[in-house]
Image (cartoon, rainbow, N blue to C red; front, side, top):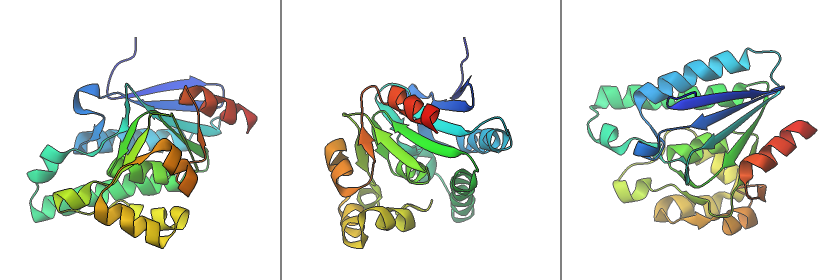
Length: 196
C-alpha cells in the first residue's frame, strides 16, 4: 500500500496525484512544496502522460500554506517560501499535459492558487473556496491575485480577497471559478481525462 504525503497513481496516460496529509488538512509546508516540485518535474517530463489530475484525501483538497510555518518565518525565509510556491505553481502552469483539479472539499489560500493554475477545475458539491489571508494580515503570493480576476472578473476577485469570505461550490460554478460540480469528483475527472 502506497503511503506518504503525495500519492501517485498511473492509469493509462493519466497520473492522479493525491494530497495525503489529513493530519495537517493537506497544508503546503516547505518540505511538501519541494516534494511536489520534484514530482511535477518528473511527471511533466514523461511523454506517455497526457493528463494530470490532482485531488485530496478526506474533505480537503488543499488548505494552503502551513500557518504555523508561516508565523515562524523571518523576512528572508518568507521570501524563499514565497518563491518556492511560485516555482511550483509556474511548473504546473507550464506543463504540456492537461491539468485537472478534482477539488474534493476545502480549497483555501495557496491551495486555491494551485487549483487556479490548473487548466480545468471540477469540484464536489461540498467544496468550499476561500482566500482567508485578509483575516491573517497576509496576501497570497502564488499567482492567485492575477489568475482569479481573469476567471471571475476584477470586482468579484477584489471582494473575494478583501473580505476573505467563503464560496460554496454552487456559487463558485455560477461565477466561473469552476467548470462543473460532480460527486464523486475524481470519477468525473477521470471520465474527462479519458475523453481527451
